[in-house]
Length: 113
Length: 114
Image (cartoon, rainbow over all chains, first blue to last red; front, side, top):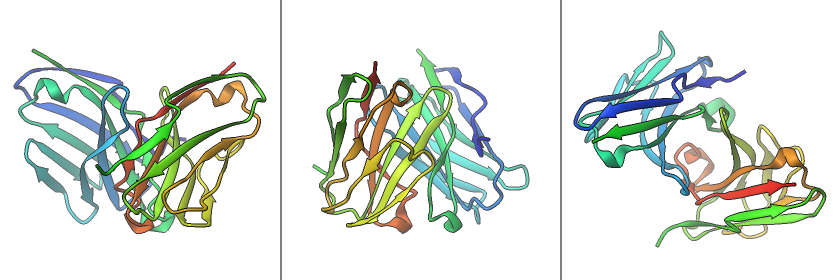
C-alpha cells in the first residue's frame, strides 16, 4: 500500500518548455513534502520542499504546488534545461511519525535538446 | 567538503556470507538512516538512528542490523544475506531527527547476493 505515488515512470520534455511532475498521497497526516533529484550513480539530493500550511513554494526555476484537498502535489520546472534530466522523487513526512520520509517510486525526466 | 561516504560502492556476494556496508558523515549530524531502493518502489527505510547508541527500525528491517557507536559512523550489517536483499542501498544523514526530512545522501552501494 503505497502512501506516496508517482504514476508516471518517465516524462520527456523539450528543452525550454515546462516540465510538470506529479505526486499523489493518501495519508492526510503528512505535513511536509519534498522533492529530491537523483542523477545516475549518485545519491538523491534535496531540491525543494513545501509545508502543508502553504500551497506554493518557489525557488528559481522550480515551483512546487500543493493541493491538500486533492492530496496532490506537483513540481514545475521552467524553463527545462538538459541538466534537469534526472529521476525525481516525491517524499512526504509527518511530525507524528518522527518525520520519517515516505517516498514515491520516482519519475525519470528526460529533457530533449 | 561536507559529505556522506559509503563503502563499498559495488559488492557481489553469495548467500549466507556476512557483510558490512560502512557509512560515514563529516557534518556532525545527529540523525542517520539506511534506505534500500528497488525498481518501482522508491526508497524504503531500513533502520535509523537519532543519535549515538539510539537506533530504531524503519519499514523493512528484517535481515539487517545496525550500530551507532560513534556519531559519524553508521554501518549496515547483513548477517546472512539472501538474494532478496539484492538492491541499491543509500545511507543518509541530517542535522537532527526533527530535520530528518531534509537529508544528505551517500552515493549508494549496489549489492548483489547470488
